[in-house]
Amino acid sequence: MTNLNVLLIASGCPEELVDTWKLPIQEACSVYEITGGRLPMFLAQVSHESDSFRRTVENLNYGTLGLLRIFGRYFPSEEIAEGYAHNPERIANRVYANRLGNGDEASGDGWKYRGRGLIQLTGKENVREFSKHYFGNESLVVDPEGLKKPYLAAMSAGWYWQSHDCNEKADTGDFEGITKAINGGLTNLQDRLQRYMDIQRVIT
Image (cartoon, rainbow, N blue to C red; front, side, top):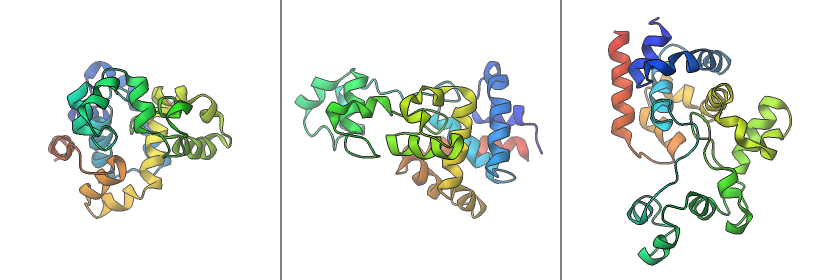
């Protein structure tokens, strides 16, 4: 098997971050059975989601046009979007309100449980489920900040991947199905595919 360092770089990881991510990803892939042909798909997806392993907290700093384009269902008019533009905390609290186990906009849950980790684990319920799975308690619900550190960022990504049947999808080559399981749609599918092809190229 091609060295993981090489695969990480092929997926987009800067060389100076390889040592940060190699061991956490190795362990996550071992625990969650992300082996063989599953690994290139996993690396392609998490590399995209984390901006090439540079970011483990969701970027919600959108302007008015970005809010209308990406979160139009939550910002039905330009006037409403303008009131939230470039205010990540307010954006998160509106976009993630009353779903994913979160309370309403005023609860602050949207911001507290915004995406963290290599797959951007989002929402109180997802955080609770991973915390119970990994620690046997709800400690991450109290303090989800640990999810942005490399080890838990990788482990939570592996857990999400396995628990959403992405191993099985990878075995059948269902890259679009994996993208939907992670993203909820096919956002930036071409970038994800390009990363996958770049990894495959160094393997072959």
